[in-house]
Image 1 (cartoon, rainbow, N blue to C red):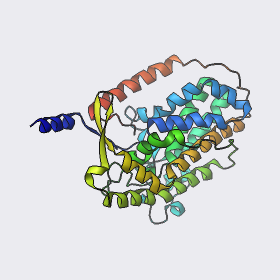
Image 2: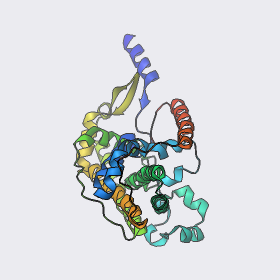
Image 3: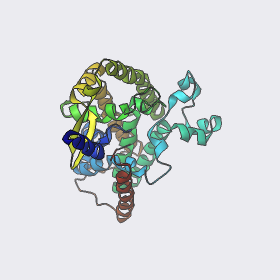
Image 4: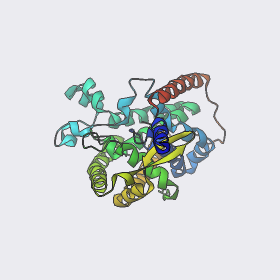
Length: 325
């Protein structure tokens, strides 16, 4: 009877880990933070002084998904909805894609490779205007979308293993693994360079991510088949809540099978973010911004984020998971 009561308490408290996430909050913040160190001296001082903002607000687009219905499509693309040879049939430029596919269909299947160049343009304009707060805000958000594009499961309609009986694999790959091993990753990725063709660069990221999605799914499927059910999951305390997570041993085995894939994708995301920031600055005429001052947050932004955070926290309580989509 005592054991039954314990199990009942666990059932009440448990929150199943593994709802779709995009690098998790930790991953996105790490990517933006490390990208600052890829910048040249002419930009580094400004970004380093404001690295707290760049890091903290890397997750704003995820929070905004609850408040803005236009936000969700910006984080992914289900490229496999466009036939056997999607990269040949799908136009690289937004206007051409709208003419061929239609805006509603494009948004339904995700628009991240189209949105990244748009954000690059906005950041370039902010640099031209020397609007320091806007530069930081747009740089932080651009970093988020670039990070998302580097995630294999952000490029397939089977984004959370729901089509193959692997529900939860999204968060497993993107959050559980980097949060478990990310402190030991090698973040020395070199210096940012100028991107001559940002559209092609962006689509190449998508191609590489999509090419890896089969391995992400297949390796976990094989591991699951040879793992006893009671060895796959465990319970961990998260504050006052008991959370069901992939066990440490299962996580370690999957990470080993992936052979460094998560670290490689994160490293590529970091250098890509730095390159896009640098490209925006160069395209803007390399304005002088390198004064070591902490930029004040605008009142309008405070009001906006107060509203977004309120909705996010409310939604988090409703779904009970506190997940970062």
